[in-house]
Length: 490
Image (cartoon, rainbow, N blue to C red):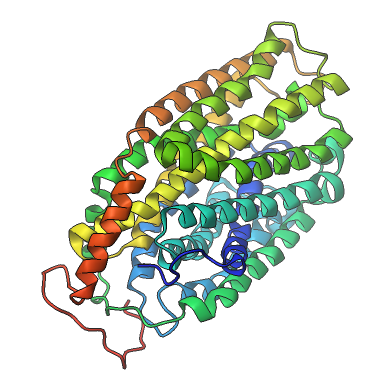
């Protein structure tokens, strides 16, 4: 059960959400700037860069469940999550700076890029998995969990958008600035400092609430035991259904984010001023999401909200491209073109985020379903499983972007306004077709998520009745926490 019954105080919502800023900065850097930095600025082949990022994601995805399992097994007076949130942020910041300032100032080798990217992602997971796993520990309420995830997504997007806005206006101003080396070092330094502040600041703010000895001492860690528990957790039917829908949604997100700067520069030909407005438009879409996701969940439930939003986002997002190819769109780069594009973007991006917020919040309900079946809570395993899916899928999306760019024949020294129309058509059709197919596949699965509000609330009542008769271990025997224990059970 959550440590807070009823409404979660606003202070807790803000502090819990603030921890997601680090993830937003990472997402902004990896998704919007890393491919174009290493490809167009440092001169590495786009296909090789996307392959390196895919490998890093796959390595990270495999390790993520181990991190989640270790987090679930951590046994200290500060609880299961806080020790991770205090230890990982500073090493993460150092690796983040290295990513944007490669040794020697030149492009690293393929293996070097893989190594740096793996280091960043593993350390980010050591922050994000414990941080997000705190949500079902804080509250068991169906709607309050959605509220906490709303604040996490809002904070994550704000962190990423602040980094993006500063990149466009301060660090690498203008379209040409994105193609120059100067500024990326400052971009990395700024992100590193904000990552440390957000993770440690959030952990410190929640310390008094969650710093308590876990109810049960976990058994000693072993790889065999960890993988056995991970397999058991991932075999939960509700999680498998979520995984199928989430996989497609994350592939689409990875492809869209990594292709965004290419589309903004070469298709929509955004000027320096228009690029500076772009993060503000995205922020408006996040605010729109924040306002409507709660009412949508109350009216439709999480599963139907996720499915509807996925398809609606893809359709609305592709409309400007379809009209452009049909020849009924204003001249790219003009005020009319940019304003119209931004108008569609606000609603499409808001719906896309709603789909992901809904899906992420659905995982919290799987925790109690698993607890009812096994007598064990495994927040870390399930949320690390979510990151496994997200990272594999995002890596696939970035890899797909690299292949689309390479196959379209976009030159590494391309400049806005000089790209042949055949290249533009190939980029647009490949992107739009893939996004629509992925959205339909995602919606089909997410709509079939089996845990409704009524079922979740009934399960909470059954679990409360079970706890009233004393804790039970997975073998059905009565257990008692050791009040004198204070070590980490790993």
